Image 1: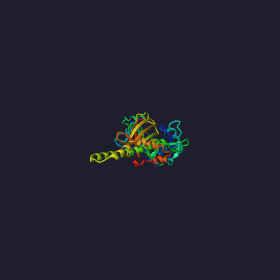
Image 2: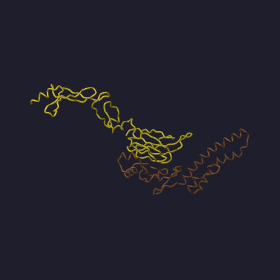
Image 3: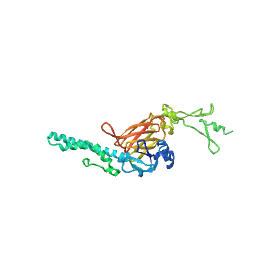
Image 4: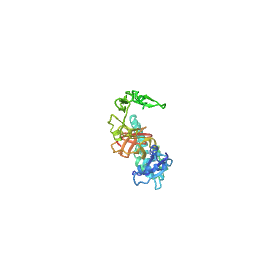
Length: 154
Length: 185
């Protein structure tokens, strides 16, 4: 079915409940009665929940762990969590680049070539987290955060 | 009455009125495969008796249905479980699901009312009929992901899915993930 139920969980993001068609048929319930049944049984007690259509969920699941909802059940992206997710993605890119640069430095050492520029690049990569945390904190919209990619990581 | 001779004239002890004013002798075959026995069939020592015999793996016969508790125990060699009680046997899966948490889709399931996506690689499976205790078994595999049990409670199971990295599990949604649950209900 296309119905989903969302609520804010104890991790500060939304949980998305998918009701099961087979169970609704087995229990012989109508759609509305089954949704009420799920809200009673499968959602923590005293937790507000909202019934939405599956198409109301954001399309980009990269930032799923930053999804929150307001008091009317409208989903948005928490910018603090989005920055944290973006930093994780940047770290993944950094790890690959750092490995490559380190290998290049070793090659230069073996061949007796100058590798000063590579050392500077490696230092920049190692300092990435502190520099980019500050840069990410200066971004104020989700669109800016999810598209942020410093040139040396591109 | 005059027709009494007609009734007594058949050796099987079973006569039927044929609708034309006469009685005709009929018989019941007694073989190992029919699962029936006829005693005193000639009627000379008393009324004929028709009795069922117990079914075996090679002989048809009368069976006794097992209760839900007896089906659950699963030790009887003579009782037969009704279809509705089969699921209570300890060796039968009590719930299963094939779902894709990344698209919040349940592809097929049994004894599951819903699945909850708590976050990336963090899902809860909610059962229609709860387990009797939390000491049940969860097993499963996913397409391009691994699964570990986070916690088990009688009414639900929380599962973590992800890809195995160097020394850790990198959280990822299973598309799909499959799970099966065994235990006592």
